[in-house]
Amino acid sequence: MTDRFIYHCPVRWSDMDAYGHVNNARFLTLYEEARVAMMFVGAREAGVTSLEEGVIIARHEIDYLRPVDYGDPVRIESWIEDIRAARFTVAYELFDGEVLASRARTVCAPYDLKKQRPRRLTEAERAFLSGYR
Image (cartoon, rainbow, N blue to C red; front, top):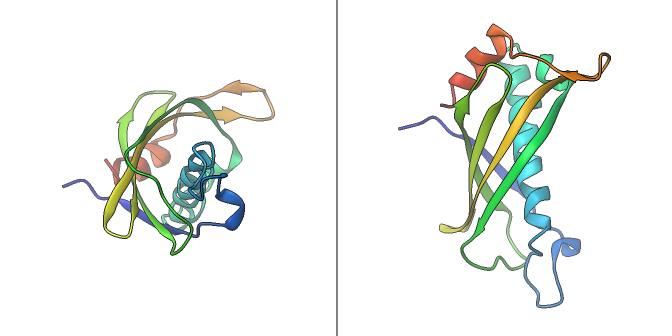
């Protein structure tokens, strides 16, 4: 079993669409919050702060399995599906209560903001990410 990073994300009133469900585009925001918590809070707790210095998004993919209504926070479980020299893929499952409501993937690339170009993962970053593989 893969270790997963667990994040409980509040659903905000502004996340709702005209039908009273979380808007499809807002799922990206929920997944972003979980990913940022993993790369900032989780990585910092593991002694890795370099991911905070720059990561860009190369691709998103979302499968919507059922609507999510306004109410209790959703649980987002994330893990690392793939690690390459200069990119990694975060996979997620979003649960509304105990019901799986969505799955997603995000391809991320470490980025040097000063030089304005992608960079390779460091050994410390690879070790941290591998803990969720």
